[in-house]
Length: 127
Image (cartoon, rainbow, N blue to C red; front, side, top):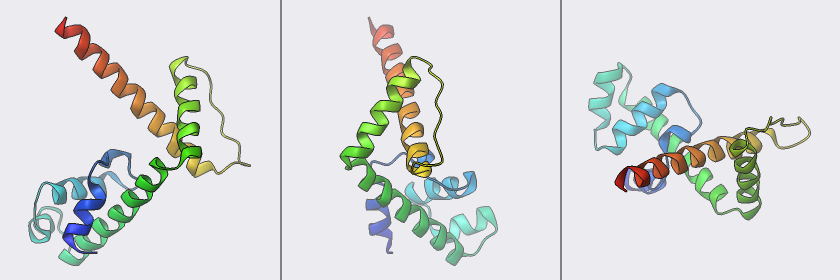
């Protein structure tokens, strides 16, 4: 995957919501800010090809998340979890369901709620 394809994949995506280690997310954020593979290589002591592998994988995950964001059933699931999180209701995900999809939906619901709270505080501060 070339640099422009990767940048397009990361556009509009919250890197912290992607699967992967904290280190891989940090590398991805540095890549997005315009650092070269060589600069990242020197910071982390890994090869340039490894930086490319990490950013390739994170870009594929970002593309998958974008696909999920356009999936109506997934968005309904996110809204379901958002309502549960708002009222602080206990959440249990059964092993019979698509666990990874439910976990992603729950994490996205938490992130949305956090954004709602931040925007609410900002609005109240301006008044």
